[in-house]
Length: 427
Image (cartoon, rainbow, N blue to C red; front, side, top):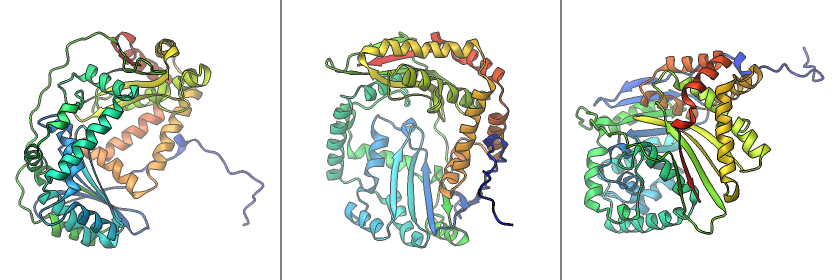
């Protein structure tokens, strides 16, 4: 039967779709290192993540986690930085290293056929990095220069200040790097922390793409023969910061034409039963381009190019954060409108059409995430690092589909109390 192109196809809301997260496989290498792998996609490409508990939470002094991540590829006992880069470029591969609040991750993107040639390079970086003094001095100079440039930007300073207010300046999530932290870094500090934080005991490997038993065997050959111990999570405890002034203002540039606004409060991480419902409420409030904050403060008032509200979950806590930059002359007016929108959330439930739009936005984003092997792998990685399985995905979908306007109103009344929020303005 010929397709009748004069008839438009049916339009369906995302809430009508069935969602299924492709399963991930778990095996242990010969030495017990857990490997999570996902065979998906038709292109012969692969992504491998090596994840370590080596983020800011674990660093013995400020700036060291980012320093190690920035210097890992600058030399090993057998290769210089140039030789490492040449090895990667020869195979058209990319190796990224980064440190977040909780984890440090090495991510390799490569054609599947080049995995055997590249795994020994990564292994060497993870076991024999030398952190040459010359490279360290270059890193320190560049980092200090980058910091000094960033400190002239009100939005950068505002991000530092709000984290310090919410978590405390001595908390890993709240402290921020200062010039003297970078300048006082020593190679001895870095080598010692690298040796303790990048042990294979706590490492997890994630593999995705057009891969299978052959690639698993290749990983096992390189990484499965190292003797490892039993990983013990450090028992760290940080007291909450003392209650400070809820509304703080800092002058960063006497000639500033723009001000940065940050309004936030502590909020539980993904393990709290209210977290997923709050994703829906936060999206409605300020989590996408059609949100209430955007509609009011950008579209109607014209105070800003953009305003956003986020849930920021970490392994050991989290926060709600509203952030925007405006002209200095309308900072106070923008803040007033933010609180007005917050108060409106607690007065009346959203109508069904507005809530349906938010549901379709969230579920539509999930459909996009399930379209490629690398994005599926990242979703699984987030679940696994937080201790979840497939049931969490199914629960999230069910909440997105079934949450009601009255549920949203109850959440708003529970969590959007203006007096509980801290406010930081930097101009």
